[in-house]
Image (cartoon, rainbow, N blue to C red; front, side):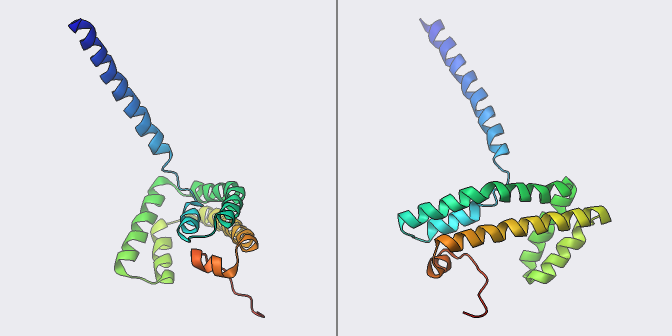
Length: 161
C-alpha cells in the first residue's frame, strides 16, 4: 500500500512540475504587447453604463486585429538589441524627467537605425497611427464626449465646435 501511495505521490509531483513548466512557457508567449490593453483598462475604470461599455468593448474588439498587425509591423523592423536600447532609453528619459520631444530624440538616437530601417519604421508607424485614429473615431461614434473624457481617451477637438 505504501509503495502505491509513494508512486502516486511521485507521479503527482512529476505532473505538477511538467504542468508548471508548460504554464510558464504559456505566460512567456502572453508577454506580447496588446495594443488595446490600455484602452480596455481605461474603459473598465471609467464606470460607464454596462450597455455602453459592451458597445465600446465590441468596437475595441473589432479594431484589435488591425492594431495588433500594425504594432507587429513596427516591432518587426527593430532587432532585439534595438528594442532593448529603446526600452532603456525610454526608462532613462522618464527617470530624468525629460519632456516628450527630448525623450523621443534620445530614444531615436539610441536605436541607431539604418536608412532602410528608418523608412520601414516610418511607414509602419504611420500605419499604426492610422489604426489608432480609426479606433478613436469608432469609439467617438459609441461614446459621448463626456464618456470619452471620463475614460481618459484623448480625442482631437473640432475647430468649429
